[in-house]
Length: 372
Image (cartoon, rainbow, N blue to C red; front, top):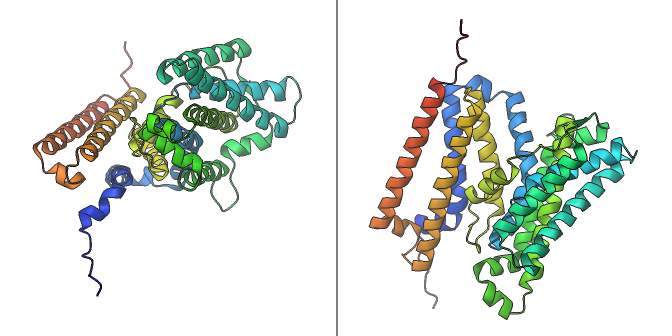
């Protein structure tokens, strides 16, 4: 005689998906707010296309960064890798007459080599990820400045501009296809391969992973190689999008990508990854920044808003991970505790501060009156 299994409560069924629910709720909030504030400008086809193009640029890097962060790592050099790879490609095309079909793969290969250097510095020289990649960010940016010598390299073949901003007639933009393809590839790599399983295992407990026979150092290097190649691909896409590249390009790629991955639910403390969450995080940040631009809020206030979202997300997911370790009966049970109530009040205070800052930004976002 079989015993009937009672169905799980709704809260228990939702708990595994809380990482993706968070950014989706924020996306819905942006849609509702902009539907009231600026529906005509925000929801027009050309603006949606801009959001997709912006998000697509960060998708390859977010995919690779998910693996790096899941292994308890960080890569602060991806912006410089993107810029240096783009400049190398531009010189191959403009100065040495290389075909764009050859220059693009070479640029991505050079990005992978830079990622390999990062990985070896971290694993062989035992330099902390934060310090190692920050130092190499300065090195790669310095090489870009030396190579470019202040020049803006522009006007590239149509194939390259198609990669950055082309569109299949009657279909989505080509960069969006590239970005989504990398996210799908990352999802398969994370969920269906040994590399993905080892990545989560290393992030959860590196010592235990080493004892089970996993080469922790080698897999860390692989993750940084992937991150470098993805950053170079983003540099190629950026060059095609702008039809130009210079040494100072992509200055905030690292923070934007890390923010998208963390907002999507990947833990900065390792062992927890969500490729779908990273995709949602990229889309959320692109929508938020576009909404702020649509509302004519200055760039500096956009940085403030992004910072508040990052802090809130990291605080929330850190608290969630602590509850998992403490065994507080799950997330929703944890929210009923005094500690959970404190977290909710703190989150509400942060959101209130964000709304207040946006209101101040709107108040002072107009052009100043000319003097005299």
